[in-house]
Picture (cartoon, rainbow, N blue to C red):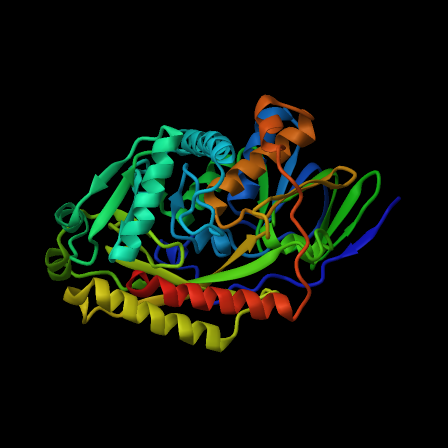
Amino acid sequence: MSKNIQVKRLPKDPGPAAWNSILPAASGYPQLNDDITADWVVVGGGFTGLAAARRLSQLVGDESIVLLEANHLAEGPAGRNSGFMIDLPHDLNSETYAGAHEHDLQQIRLNRAAIDFARDMAEEYGMAPEVFNPCGKVTAAGSSRGGQHIESYRKHLESLGETYQLMNAGEMKNWTGIEFYHQGLFTPGAVMIQPAAFVRKAAQGLSSKVIFFEKSPVIGIETGEVHRLNTPSGSVKAKNVILAVNGHIQSFGFFPRQLLHVFTYASMTRALSSTEIKQLKGVSDWGVLPADPMGTTVRRSSDYMGSGHRVVVRNHATLNQNMEVTERNLRNAAKLQERSFARRFPMLKDVDIEHRWGGRLCLSWNSMPAFGEVEQRIWSAACQNGLGTVKGTLSGMMAAEQAVLGKSELLSEFLEHQAPSKLPPEPFLSLGANMTMKWKEWQAGIEL
């Protein structure tokens, strides 16, 4: 039975996508202004959509693939994250990121498959080390409470048979250049990326096999034997569609009352001067995840293509089920980040913040993806539960394999999950979730 799906709203991303803003201007891709046909359409040009497009290109031979991006590439959530590709358990609903033993072992296998896929992209498309850096990550604590989280996480990693290295206060200072952190836990399997540069380079590498259109949001789908995807000034007819749009999937009418729309917020400094770089000391590229999941993520990045040496701090989270943030949300985040930056970088007290922004996350109550065939030959690869770089890549790969192959060994393991659970009704959901997050931020103390 054919349907006429009208997209209820288009995503709104507050502030600039800073990682993209600090790069040289991109030449970009055209807007869709005609009525065209294709064998496959991927909707969404983030990590999920790019992975889906690449995996399709490996599987479908000479069949045509079109990718539609609502904004410019790397301007949406893909250009707004902190740039960690994490292989180990990282459940944001957990007190210490860890989950059940067998589930975590499975997630590690799947996450590493996604990172290997991204690594192949980086190698094939000639990405520089500043864009894709397999340097591991550090989970760090600035308080005794944070240290307790690290000890709990350490025990869990040991039970999983995972390699780690504890770092004391002196080692943390030598590495970061700051005295804030008392303890760290290093794990070698994570990758740090410049997310906007990764997206740009991946698209450039795929452009010989995939036709890209920017500023071409899908505003409606007429389903049928051949689907018609309408944009404001054109359309694509295609038999097969992959919706790689994360939480925006609900705007298409799918997964009602099953997804949580959380915004996280970040600030990026201006480029540091040579004097400030000497004052800061430490290594030139590092990233710290907070021992408490509600704490502050910090990233220091070195110069890439004239972008300069910069510091990013990310903290604060709000549930906004209408997928839009308020000015108050942004002001509150700015205050918290100014305080967090000052605590950690007193030697950079004269360094201004150049960019502030918010980024959309999609979570489910039970940390499950919104995945699968939602209409005949329309697949959803959505709800990445706060790990868009890794789980988005994985979800895109798996959607392509399900659509083309029907089954594979990796897909069988990936499909061992439940559907996203139903959410409590409003206004109890938003009131309760935002109060809980505020309480957890207060509990995080100095880790925030």
